[in-house]
Image (cartoon, rainbow, N blue to C red; front, side, top):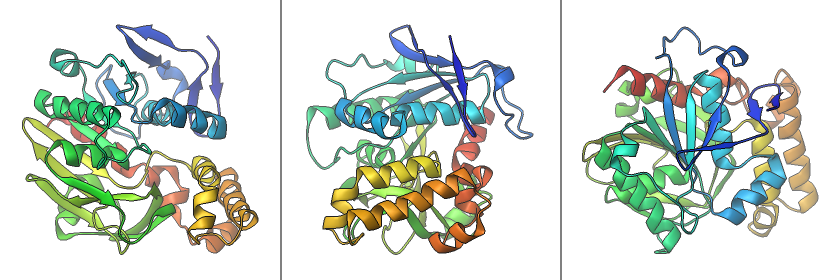
Length: 320
């Protein structure tokens, strides 16, 4: 087995199947520490990768890993020694865990996806069914982007196309609500901040048991808690798990849409912007690029960017 180390995350070039689920295990000695937070000896995380197969492969061609693999790398950065399994509910014939299986995990994470939750398809039905099972099992869960939308629909809320257009690159001036100021999901975030974001859909109505924690002028629902059945879900519409390299790759993958919708004047202009984002990933200390892009440490510093995931892991491991 060959382990590859980049500037931020540890990645594995091989995978093994365990109990029908893809398993990624990284030796704790190789991983960066999780601050001063005491963690159990071995955590078990389940990552529900919401991307369908073609989107998964397109993303791998662009940035080298799927959304689920990005989540696993990020979780392994935050919780060294954790065992991470991955399931793919959008895949036809996917074997999904039952309630007993789900209850063997400390937490479930739901990734982003290009699927539209207001469309009734076999893929979206499987994703929503899995999320309903997570709620019923009472396992703490977290989701970003479409992961938030999946949880909202599973609990009785609705999703629609974004009324004020897509957020591509970064969600700007995300602002905490009164409840958000008190909620541990956003502990450590300032009253207003930016974050990597890519979405063209949004939560229209929160389900009963949903609490709005953050919003901005583009998207009314940027962060929520949902209590449904026996479960608790924390979610964000943005992507704390994405670094600037992956943000640049997502911009390039969406180039045609961004140009046709007027977000960039041409493919060349989009590439110039994406190149600056990638350059800032390579050298986060470059004040000139941060100034041009309008970004601060909430995006450029990994400890700030991962705030919500770090807070959720603390919540999941210390109990509800």
